Length: 173
Image 1 (cartoon, one colour):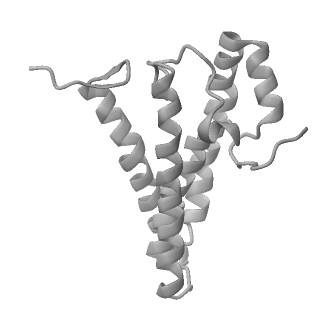
Image 2 (cartoon, rainbow, N blue to C red):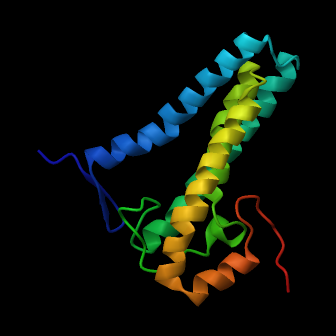
């Protein structure tokens, strides 16, 4: 029995599905548990009232989910996925990728920070930054050199004009 499904031309099997779920649920969960442990250990707690924490955290989480959801269609149209195992045939520069080179990494930051704020975890700022740093190192030393080799000057021009993860909604002329 084949339990795979297709996203465009990419066949997603159980292993890729599990890896995706781990990145989206397990990793943020581990960082949130770490934030809780730090808060307990240091006696920290966000003192913002619940009526501030819940809408702020929920908004950050919702924007992160939307950002990541908008990041997938360009990959599917290009015959690939964000996974290094299903690379695209062309450089993705549309959708959220018009505004920053790694919008999914920006979304991952919100997957930790949003729930952390809702739960009142002061250390979630630290653990979200740590997760972003891990992703930034991976992008800088592995992903972007691979894109440079594959797409050459096209990627270099994109890299020069598009910020890393903080979107810029205007273009330099």
